[in-house]
Length: 183
Length: 115
Image (cartoon, rainbow over all chains, first blue to last red; front, side, top):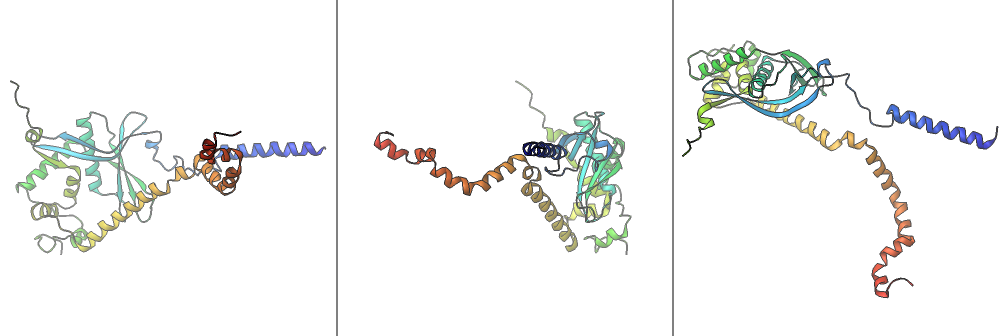
């Protein structure tokens, strides 16, 4: 075989290999893709970031909620995401209440349909990049009931309930004046 | 004469924050103490809050300073390559005819241009 032919074959092979590497993205940065996303969020569009919504709950109360992230799914429903940084990789009732209030505020102020399932993205010691937790949200009636409960507590019509977790009591700064603290 | 506009704040009254409701469900008693006596935090809670703020700062620092998308972009790579050529290219460019034409412009203008 002639020398010039070998050179040409090597050059073409190198060009083809370069193209293949480029198309595979081996040279470019590694992108994680969407495998780590919950299936509900795949293909969803980011609609609201740190957006404040306000809606009227009753004659005297207005509910304000700041939405961390709201994505619009392919079906058109909004999916709420709450971002949390905490040591433990778990969700609490307070997350559900916060997301439910956000859902109430969005649906009653903007009129968009919000999914009953939301996500809490917890960035913890174990998962520093964050991990999604799926939660079911409360109904609008429950949110309204919470607002009226708050009203009753402030008006001293109802007695305040204690935390169900004794550990919360131990860490509470009002423990020394609380008459009902877990001892 | 038009009627005065109804004050939104006066009509709607007070505002409840979603985060306030979330705090309420953790412990109503502690929440009520916080409302009536002012919020207090233990030393441990203050440390936890400070640590959380530091984590957020780290997160934003990573996002803003590292700029992974930009660092891996073709434009930046091209800029890097061009910058790596600069020590070689700059003296060569300065020695070139075009550079001479540019740098000796005042002289040229004084002399009335090239022959």
